[in-house]
Image (cartoon, rainbow, N blue to C red):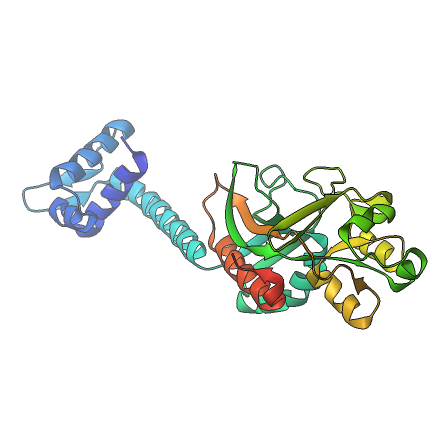
Length: 305
């Protein structure tokens, strides 16, 4: 016996004054409602209803039980109603994680718009270049770059992020301007260690179907993209930057684009969530907003393919 459903049936019978009307309102067979009430009486060891051929009314014990039961049924219905409302309206606390540069330059400046759109939403914006464990750290959604290896995550592709090879003018004055990819071997770079591998890989360039790789030495490596940018601006070496990060520095002349006929490999971007979790309205709303935000802010720097 489902105690709560039996309690609901009893309350409905008292309210309706009839098993037949109660069954219609509950969309159940009359026999099922009668059985639920009988099982409830057997469990409690008291008669809850006085039955005649024409009417049904609560006994003294039934009336006392009814007062408590009706309050419980109403509270459960109200709780379920609130949850259903919350499931369709973005509200509550949302924990998201994005790469450092994305957080500082793209997401943080736009957060006011998101919060104004959803006044019942609060957001914890984590900015980290490491691949956080969404389940262990309680993160609802993260922006990830690269190939998604974790099968425990559900991903929504949002585009491919373009990168550029550049250097500060005073580095070029000291070390010279590379004219071909082969000349990169005599230069040094500011190395960025991606969290996914933890190691410095070769510098990859491509042009019209041709692809080349060169190991460029680095006297400085870092796991922080902001630190890598600062070191590159300071002239410590060549640096590969996301184009949206490099663009203002290229426009100001603080950095110079190198080998413009060659392109760095684009990085796939995806919004990921734990696949074991049903997406709440707040998570779905953030993903929709974030995808449009990236397309609007990055524009042609985000290849949509």
